[in-house]
Amino acid sequence: MNFQSRVQALPRLGLGVSTEYGAARSLGALDVGALRAKFPQYASFLEVGVEVSKGLDADTERWASSGAPTTYHFLDLNLDEPEDFDADWIAGVRDHIRSLRPSWICGDAGLWHFGRRDRGQMLLLPPILSDAQAMSMAEGVARLRAETGLEVLPENPPGSAYVGPLHLLDYFARLCDRADTGMLLDCAHLAIFQQARGHQPLDGLADFDLSRVVEIHVAGGRKRSVDGFSWIEDEHSPSVLPETWRIVEHVVPRAPNLKAIVFECERCRLPDVLPVFRRLEALWG
Image (cartoon, rainbow, N blue to C red; front, side, top):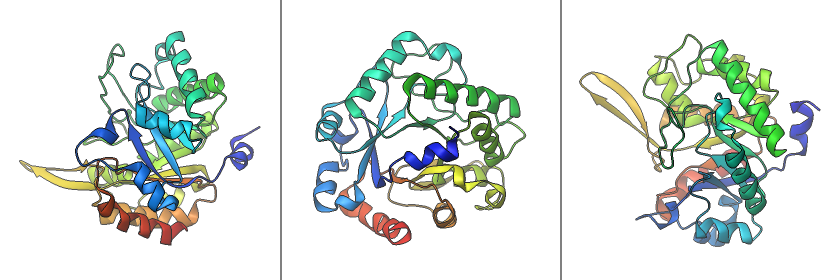
């Protein structure tokens, strides 16, 4: 069964939020339970960032035990490195899947570590934007799908600089085609790439197959400049840049298989995130 057939069986999760180990206990963190209690339409599901070596924190376990929907976002896998798929890691992933019962797996298709995978390294770099690298990533997506039985949605990572001849969207078009998969389009990360390469926010989207987009991420960012070098910092703040909104507003009505939107705001106060959720609800409600 190909992706266009498989995607029809995926649930429409709606609007959700993300977390990772310990995020809910940090100063000023979003109280996901309070969000779900007061505005359940904005916390329809929880995207859980997982490092297998750390496991799940008590807040995530409480959410999972309630039976509320989740997705599994890996934070420790280089999809293009076969050695990352070791038996212990796969066993850990399967254990967490049993606990979370996620609707699918997703994660940035970049470098989460350089060299041997170590606990807490959490390096995240974008991939080399080449045809060969897209092929390697596609093999990893297909392998993880086979190992877990779940859809695996590669995400476009952030970066202050990108290496390789391809446009980011061309790279992911090749990856998705060869892995026969959908993707998680991070609109904030795409805005970062477009600025870094001197493109307009919507460049490349007219030629990209938006039926591949199953999930999107929205997050705040901050424009910075030091000694003539300008970049966008991915802050996960409530301050969503206009360039990101342009991408979101273009993609959402044109993505026929869109099932989920995550506002990444895990370390923000509840009153500060509501305007963003209201805008997303008006766009995709």
